[in-house]
Image (cartoon, rainbow, N blue to C red; front, side):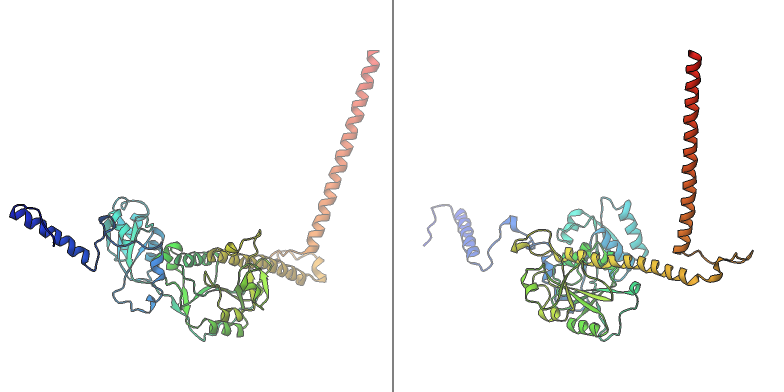
Amino acid sequence: MLRLPARSGAAARRAFAFLSARLLSRNSSSPRRPPWKAGPRPEARPGGAELLRLREDDLPLVGRQEVLFGLAPCALALRASRRNMARLLLHEGGAGHGARAELARAAEALGVPVQLMRRRELDALCRGQVHQGVCMEVAPLLPKAWPEGREDGPAEGPAARRLWLILQEIQDPRNLGAVLRTAHFLGVDKVITSRRNSCPLTPVVSKASAGVMEVMDVFATDDLPGLLKAKAQQGWLVAGTVGCPGSGIAQCSNIPIASCVEFLWDRSTLLVLGNEGSGLSHEVRSLCHVLLTIRPGRELTPEVESLNVSVAAGILLHSIISQRKGQEDLLDKETSVVVGDSQESPASSEEPEAGASQGPRVWAPAADAEAGSGRERLLGGLIALLGICSLLGCLCAHGCICLWSFFST
């Protein structure tokens, strides 16, 4: 039994009440948290909340809102006007000038309310992300459903080749945003993701893509193997991706493996990138015609035998799309040669009639050879003239020396 020291009645009652409260708080099912741990618990890592929202695309949009943050994502979202925008939130310190003032004018023109807030409030809204003093409450942006069974065969001709980027189960929002930004910059024709186990189009994705997600079309499909089969039947090349030679995935595959710098892009292609951890699934890999890899520049340890998926996407896309410009230049050169040869005729050496209209000048090897021979003759004549002048100068100098020696004696 708890015994209290002899005190006055009021003091004893206060002490007993305090001790009773302490005992009850210890026995309660919800332990008391220290003051410095009060408030919402922080995320395990930045972007971790997006990985828990992979199924939120199936929820209805009624009542759902998210906070878009960053100058570029908010500006491009206003320009594209593809979302329902509730209000624009600006840092009160620098909202009257610069890019934020232009953003406020654009929002007012669209009828979006603008509200000034303190930086601490903006930090709390976007959970400590880098917002650059700009946030916006918007409705979520969903990928477009890919129309199944759509007939879209490969285009004819080198200049009309197309490149589609297929993403299977990319889960990290920053990886997805970086891939979208690279694909948009390099000129990929379409981006299609697998709806299952893929990261949704969240504000973190928009920020990582520098706002590109707000203006480009991202499609999603529930049947990625069916899409690959349909495109292969239409004549498209399906190119998968694997780690460097020597990894387990590359060794167990019976599909030819080629370096990305050796790959010849001669027809419309689907480039398929897999999950950050496991890569392409066995079913998708079996549907590929070729597997592309990036060869390392040194001997690697088993822990670092692959690249980040967004970095690998940039290298692979650039090595493929850079062939488009080179082959277009070669095609233009070959076309000009063919046109020049076809315009030659036996009567081409005759003088054209006065006032007759002449077509555009086309490069021809014979004309260049004739012009080159004329320049060579002119250059030879100049060299001969310089030689004669130098000889005359030497004779004059010799004569002057002889005269001076004669008169001096």
